[in-house]
Length: 184
Image (cartoon, rainbow, N blue to C red; front, side, top):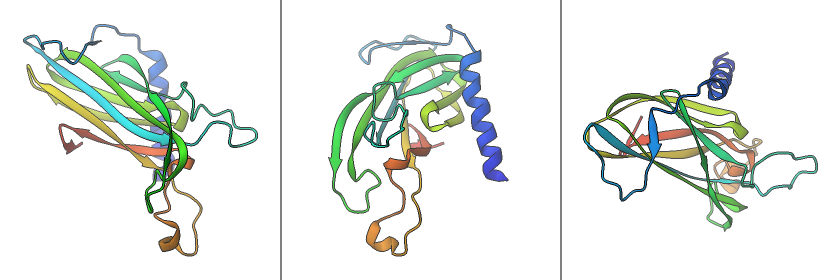
């Protein structure tokens, strides 16, 4: 039941991205721009890996393509973050990113008023939406780091031989959200 409630909540959060249309909450800035009084800079970063496109016969997924994006909603204003992608072939044992796939680097620098904000991060392709409240102090530069939590795979009889049981092939199941080095 808790899982179903989480799915319903994610669906509601994802739906909210299409409803809100504010444009006065934040603006995109370069990292060199000076932060004016009363404002804070927020840099959003994530690195994650997906499977290669077209590995399944009837796969119409956006995974592994430039259409795979993150959406950020802050107090009703939405930004689309497109990732820089490259082929990746990690071979580390027990690494959820081990294997051939596409590695994404997402980044967005924004300027917004100091204070309390409602932040929603979404990955529509994987049906993930996470809501966090953040407080930004006047004149500060802040970093949000989104660490992917990869989906599980079918259980195996000897998990010690095959690794942790979670990997990028099945998409992400969520994010851990870090603000200035502390988990939210």
